[in-house]
Image 1: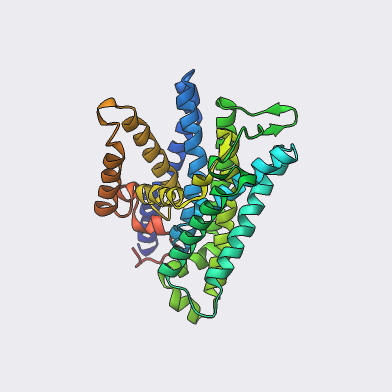
Image 2 (image 1 turned 90 degrees about the vertical axis):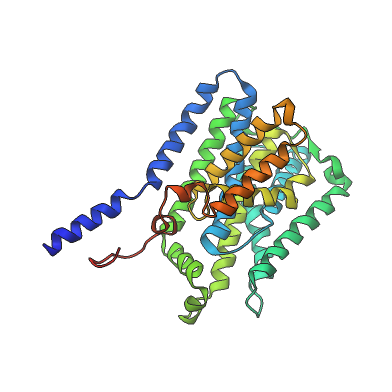
Length: 343
């Protein structure tokens, strides 16, 4: 009877897993979206932007949702990588996908690694506020720097970015770029899922739950945080490169506190720590923004209305939209073998 009860408990635990169903549902929606939209190119462009910005949101989720790093500077890595590939295209006339996307990832990784080493690897354990303000300051300083730097277009940014190439093929706005962005997002998402389920993910889960206890056991907590912070920077860098190619433009606002804060809202709206939550949050916020901005009667006040919607979600559903459907155990993750008496 004990064995039967244990088997039933395990089956119940498996039955409660809804995240895989949500992930599959989101993938199916993403695959059919361009065919449903058809010739409505503006909506295909919007959908492509959602996919690209979802990678920026995932990069923040890797920091806060998985590692407890409150970063208000993810747009810094996003924007710098976008500028780098734009300059490589302008000055070196090179925009092949096999070279520029890895370059963007390396740029984001190295920049985040340097900033993470400065903020996280000091003699004293940094507080959440210190890291948040440090990343925010870095993002603001970079925005001010490029705003006055004529070589990178100053306040006007860099326009007419060279088209992304695969061999002799050039990607332009439309269904082809949409599926390219979807493919890159899937690779990023799968890599993040593997990270979350790995031994490193187990350490990150322990850090998130009780950082002091993990440090007591001998783990160099801040070193792990710096490593994940650098990896999140690489993800943001890839997103920045794709954004630059898709928009044909990159500007100071793409690396400033405004976009960094927007990435935070994407995650909080969808649900942090789930990886798919930031994707859902990005889609929801961008679609709501598009719909509100298109209504003549509220064109002047739609940002206020959007802010009220986001504020309501953060206040009354702090676990985000996914918190309504996903249990804390599944959202946070469970590790090891559960015994009969565990719930």
